[in-house]
Image 1 (cartoon, rainbow over the protein chains, first blue to last red):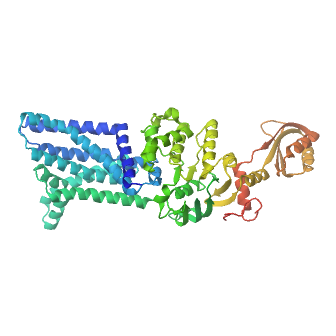
Image 2 (image 1 turned 135 degrees about the horizontal axis):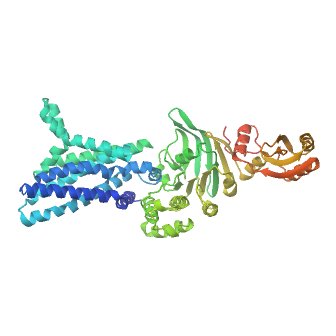
Image 3 (image 1 turned 60 degrees about the vertical axis):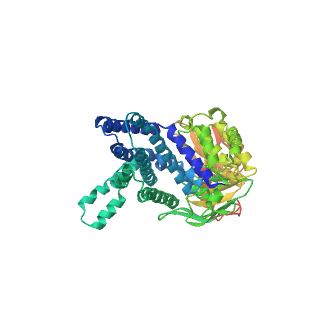
Length: 238
Length: 325
């Protein structure tokens, strides 16, 4: 059997499940309302023709919304007793983990794509810097992917969806704000550590229009680590 | 196809399954009979690969479930105690997901879905969301899922739970057909179910297999434990005396019925004799008035008590294969 067949099966099931339940519509609606508000506020009310501030706000919004997307990924399987099916089907753990991950990532891409509607007035009436905006969107997607991987991991650790979301949000916020602790530290080692761990600092590279390999590797690495732990945890649970 | 050798399952310091061994061959339907909490589901889960055995080996279709469970999973159709359904999906999307996950060739999926939906009588609900289905339909969607891909080994944990009598009949027919070419292990706590469709029966209680035998030996054991219950009026001593002279009664108890004054409740433990009711009736008529007489259907508890009492000593009712202490 082709290794991708099982992954695709899980992936399509996840996508279908998102759209058959109110979660996807709710998350997309809140995200659009939020970005629409921030965009209008930042650009039209303050009269600054860049997306910098909007991207910052989108980052925080994602951190709060992603746990809503990921909370059911495994917790829902535990409470619905469907984990027994997933585990006994001829599926490898990594196929289950990645199928679910790509399902949630697709939702993130969809959310992001719909928010591009905000760019229309910017291009019609302004003089935007396309490379900056592109880099910002790439950074936003990478940030969202890391958040999903972390949220999915916490969903696997608890049977309760609400608990999964309530743990994920503070953990993500910690990763976001840990960079701000820098100024409180005198130790160079800690300052370095905090800045390397910070979602916000790495994300701001992208917002400034920089595609730094360190930042890209950081976000992909966070995803990879969380997904690996997730997969090993499933193995251990057996 | 299924082989368990000295399998033990522990959760922490608690031992759920004690050293059980048995096997299921191709073309055989084996019933797993035991009261709730006897260890049926745990054993099923170990065979399905959902949990692993603490010690001992579980082999399915030649694969060791401890190390090669992914290979074995392709050969197994498993219906857990609670059908594992995604409530928001409709029946055909759900079955399509399972078919894909089982690696069924995409060209064959449509015909496979038709086949299992027909076998489980799901044609009328294919586009319905699963959360809208009744318990009987949910159970049958679970069974359909297990049948997908025509697996060599079918594990069914209480497949007829929640079905009405007509559906039970249909489900048994499906299982019987599958059992002709495959190895089927089904668990239940309903006695007639196993005697009707299984070729062999394993009785389990408190995590131990008490006996492995044929439905006939189980039936025999059941009859040996059966009793005849009667209501009569008359003199207690006279009736007792008359019953004492009847062959085949092992014990007699006569008590006045509190609910019906003047009436005596009679309970006789009897051995396996087909004409015993007639002889008891005659004895009562000769010594008093008979109002009601019936043979008590053997209950699972009776059979368990019998097996628990006789394990290891009475080999006449248990076949020598796989008798574990």
